[in-house]
Image 1 (cartoon, helix red, strand yellow):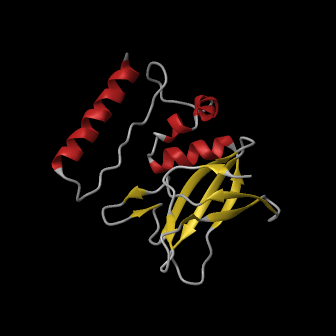
Image 2: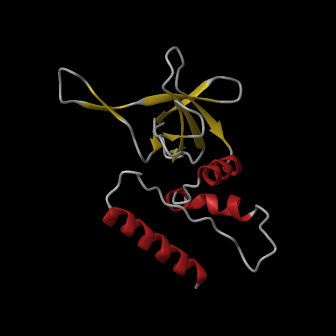
Length: 160
């Protein structure tokens, strides 16, 4: 089964113009390969120097298989280590998204709203929501301004 993906990484072969998706074997809790998912890093965030999942040379991505199950991709740039992927629950997918700050993924995976809604919130009125945007540290000012405007728009929609 192929997974839905975002922020897909592609490889260009030196002697051709051919682009190929990097596929990762997905394992279950027993270590059995049960599917394939497209490598992605949509759970990474900017740490001030690099995009990572909080550890230098490591990356995370979330994908969903055609049957609805979620996959957590663990990428690595370290020599001798292999990129892996594992099946995870909807609740774990919500945790990984919130940990990364990339809450736009809730728009990409609307079926996670139920698992997200089951989480306790603060004592404030109604449901809380985290808003975040990714901004490249070297982005031109107009790109940063556009991101800020988009963030303000999303917050205004939520407050309505």
